[in-house]
Length: 150
Image (cartoon, rainbow, N blue to C red; front, top):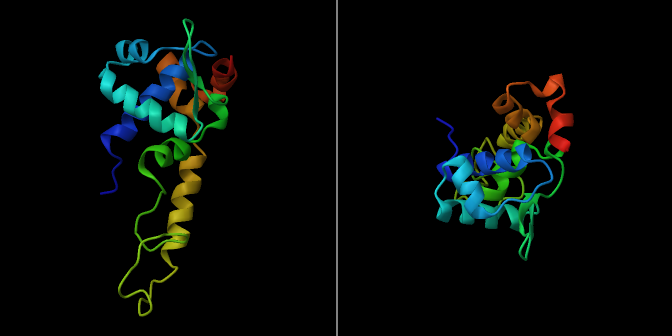
């Protein structure tokens, strides 16, 4: 079974919370309170998301975290990659730094790239706006993306 880790699931929840609050900034404590995700986990997720530019942080009394770009421009693949690294079903993918002992003999060499690209494309086609829309009781195709850009 192909399964994302719990931290990635939390990252989507945190990002959806930020999307639902629009352009407002939220502190890590507010995000933890609003989502039910423990504060240390929220802090870890925020650091990873900020490192990839998916969120921005603002220091000071009115500081907090906000989305780095509109929810409709952030693919689920971006969030997964920020937490887990490159999206791939196997280690033998294009651009991998992993070394396979049977790479030169493998009949599947390069064959997994097509599968990995298809998965990446599918995950990219679902945006944060799509994920956050049902939480508000509407679908992104019904204008959720516009409402989540505010």
